[in-house]
Amino acid sequence: MMDEQALKARLPDSVAARIQTIKLTDGTVTLVLEASGLDADNRAGLESAVKQMLGEAEGVSEVRVAMVADRAPAPPVAPAPKTPRIIAVGSGKGGVGKSTLTANLAVALARMGRKVGVVDADVYGPSQPTLFDNKGAKPEGRNEKLVPVPSRHGVPVLSMGHLVEPGKALAWRGPMAGNAMAQLVDAHWGDTELLLIDLPPGTGDVQLTMLSKFKPEGAVIVSTPQDLALIDAQRAANLFETGKVPIIGLVENMSGYTCPSCGEVSDPFGKGGVEDASEGTGIPFLGRIPLAMEIRISSDAGSPSAAGDSAEAEPFRDIARKLSDWLDAASKSEAAVSKENA
Image (cartoon, rainbow, N blue to C red; front, side, top):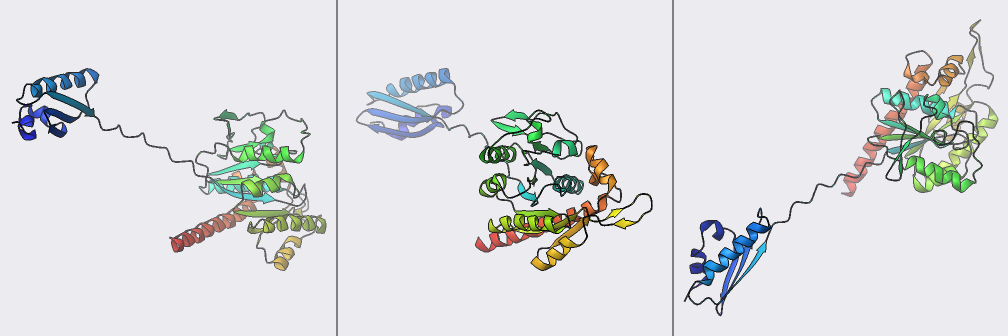
């Protein structure tokens, strides 16, 4: 009477090597063969040959063959794109230079080696297409998301100014503005590591949508030195504090004007008010930016001052360095907390 080993010995070595299990019960032989690398014709031929060779053995009345093949390895899954860190740049009122600061900080940080993008969340009065000289450019769509518009300064940008006709007014209610901002943030930012969000003035629906959907890692508050602007800036700071968003610091813009003819320095908006507010609130003071014709000209030309090496670029670079240091410190703190919780 044949046993399993004797049956296995009747098969060629190449076939025997494929046997995973073989069992003889009441004249019935059941085999499981490993069939990786064989196409349908080869599998059929192998099954037929095994049945013939074992069916001729003494005491075998039936041969049953099952074939299995190792599953092909699953294709590698691309890692999910890393969500950029978000820094909000806000103010309590319009006209304090918030957009100019955002653009210059982005360019200065990019020159420092950071991969920075800008979202122009001021859906009613977008400025970034002018500041980055890409007016008229239209973002592409991919998988129902927008692809940011490149700029010649290496900073990708998304703005409602890229989506509507120039000069066209948007008559949108608040929730529509908030949803528009969400589409600009939730875009294909690629390898961008840091998003600066240029917020509209005030504390309305766009800010509330941002806090609920895309909570920033920190916020920079911009104000001119005058009391009215400072009151509004304090409201913006209070909103971030209520949303548990750290205030990175305060920036005083339009601080001092040097007459190009006589060199005399005047302070049409006052001076030092933001720094005094910093001392009174304990919020860090990041620096002041002068009211300079050169900054206005370069902004209108779509070439932020921080893209060059003029004296007007230095205040922006200095604030960008402080922001960069804050980001590094925040990363180290987060890593330390994660290590403690591990």
